[in-house]
Image (cartoon, rainbow, N blue to C red; front, side, top):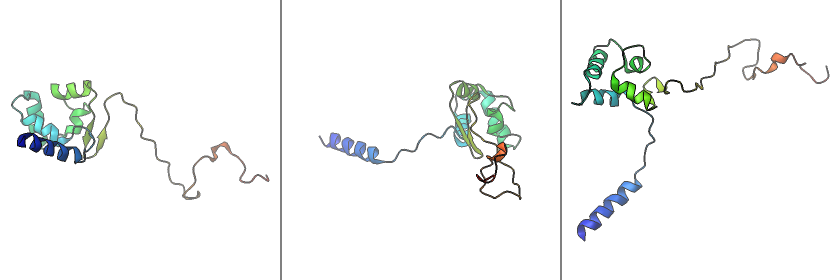
Length: 125
């Protein structure tokens, strides 16, 4: 009975711990995958190239470098990647990046840039 009480106390403690949401596979996880004995030679070679400063994990994931089979599998499974430079959505996902308006010194800084329809400045006009 003491073992059951101990296990129950552990489960209650684990249940009370906050859970961080999964942000995606990051550089640390990819490096850990490359060090595993089951890692492909391509993944190990990619990690070695990264440690030499020849490329980054982001370049490999984006397809700018040869992709090891583990990276291809993660992409095929639509697993997101999260790098120090920001979150990388799976290929083919819609981009939510909006172009930033250019600054024009003649406009008010809080202008919403909606006056392209040439509407009058006043309702009296």
